[in-house]
Length: 90
Image (cartoon, rainbow, N blue to C red; front, side, top):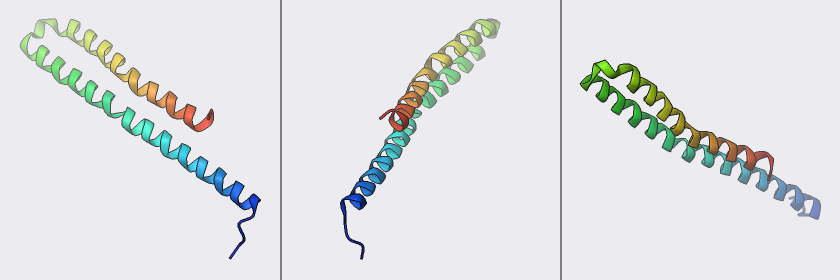
């Protein structure tokens, strides 16, 4: 069995830090993607309900649905930025 020299311990610590960063970034993206997915699904479902009830307002509803989807997606983009920061800046 190999001796635990300071060099081996240092390399092991670096490997553990890299693994921790990968796990943290994965969790940030995985959990951060749940909210936008649910939010965009709700926006789409309610927009379809609104269009079914008032077909004459299809253009207005579609425009507002796309705007709401873009706003909901920003939280997913924020979690992506945080994941990159965890991987590359820390």
